[in-house]
Image: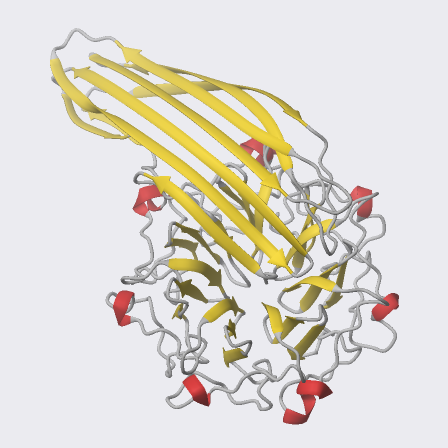
Length: 601
């Protein structure tokens, strides 16, 4: 669901996993990539996390941070990762693609129906790359519920997996990838028309859409909800005569060009060249954001100029879209995030469980922007089945919504976003590096009560940001933020224990994002400096001594990301430097029998 995305990451770090890309799709798991390594968390019933078992991750606190393993990719590094319904695929640094997880329909493309990643020894160099034909390199991969598509270096597009509705676009309903002799040069390319090539792919549950080189869109597969946008419920792609030049382009309005295409479970959305968003397909829960629950695209007279644009608020336009099971999100030109559709689990992040987008006056200025915390700027957006995640400018990830399998990565199974006290600064970030802190002192006569109060003081100044998505659009953001954090911890212990711990940490982050346009140039610069000192002490008359060694940790991150289309380029540069020093000494009474201390770095 990306439009001509090119990401270049230049990072220098020590023992750190700093996420630089975030991806998920129609399922209940999430993946992030850093320095060519991949970490995934959430549902793992079919091995889709790539950890050699089928145990979920992220539903208990001890499973995140350094305890969360990276996916074994052998001697290769990942340059991109996508998460489907119950499978995951990664493009490697040799421009091949490997997939793991559920394989009932051949969606892994390895010529059988056996899952990969749910048992030890199935990944790494043992896992074969998907055979897409002689000499073909993969530029993009997109994963849906049960099928996968790839855009190749030779401009061909190939799809494999489930095909009962023609969603593979090969003119029949035969699955591909689940038996020998179906992949490689034997796997047909999708015919999108004479002289046309695919620039970006969007894969839903039972349908597939492609953004073409002339900024038009074609879709194939199931049309049961109008998700193809052809004003009919007649599917396309299960007969050869329905493809190629016979497959029409989706009418999104007179004179309009499409910049981005995304697919939800059974609905589709397009970002147009005027910054508007239009959606079609299933709309029972306001997925389309049109203040009703009527499907669009399944009957005559619903598309083109008759299809309303999503009302995002007065003077607001979209710069990025993503769609999940039955909800949709848009990143706006002022870098606010708005979501609409199904909200039973808080996946809209509005602090309640009210579905939005199907009632009158629920959109536009009445649709709230998400609060992700003081000064937070969204850089990447990823929408899952019933949950949503955002990558922020400080290289952190926040997720909200349904959390049955730990897909929010917060070490529990509690939903977030359905209560006003769960968003903003109250919403924790996903911990992907360091040790999840857990300290306990046990003795036959020792109890401890700990109370902590934290005060945050944040001051920020920011220049006005403007953005527009046009053929030669550029946005540059520069902002400046300083923050001071003080933490006071008091421990009362009913035993003779003397413990002194002093921890000092400092972090400096600088983020700049730039884009330029023939009509405007805006520059915003952001710098954040945080210093934290925590001292904990309790006094005892005993003399048994346990000393914890001091540690130091430094992380330096520099990242450049370029997203380009033939109509525009957006680039961002970020740097992050973190230094931490910790010293600790403890003197315990002789009655203390166990000390278990884990300090996060």
